[in-house]
Every structure is written in C-alpha cells, then in structure tokens.
Length: 102
Image (cartoon, rainbow, N blue to C red; front, side, top):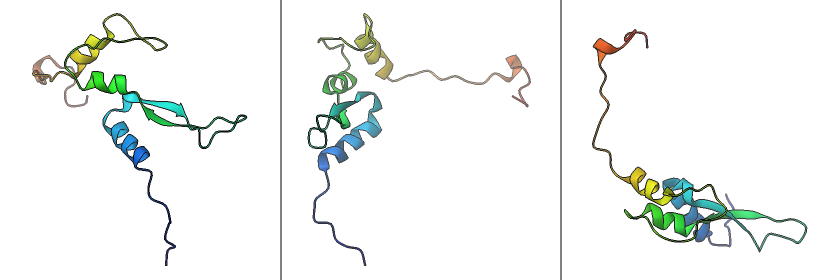
C-alpha cells in the first residue's frame, strides 16, 4: 500500500514541462527563491515569453535583444524557419554513387 501525498502537484512546473516539450528553445532558468539561500542559489526552469510570442507569430516582433546570441534579422529568420515547407527532396538513383550500399 502506498502512502498518500498531502500536497497537490506543481501545475506551473508541469505546464512549463509541456511547453518545453513543444518549444525547447523558449526555456530558460530563473532563481528559485523558495529553495535558494544566500550561499546557494537554486535554479528552476522558466519560460521566455518574448521568445514564445515570436515562435507563435508569423511576423517579426519588436523588442529588446540583448545579452544573447543575436544578429540583425534574427526574429525574421525565426519567422521564416517556422513557415511550412512545400518542397521535398527525392532520391535520384541515376545520379547517386553506390546507391545500394549508401
């Protein structure tokens, strides 16, 4: 027989895990104030909502871009990367080298 737990699940962290499964690039770290001490900082997963908003739109959004790997046109490139691809690569046996063993 298992002992019942007397606390509810942490729904916030559960939701962050679900977002992380769908959009891993928007997950960052934040200091966990409840578990941290002045001598020992403890971190938890958090959502970068600006990055999430950018992934969920088909336009380049404005805003501050600092303290991260960035370049001019980064947001536009994210929009472009999220567009559906309507082309497919198809094998060409005649132009391939060692088709049967590759």
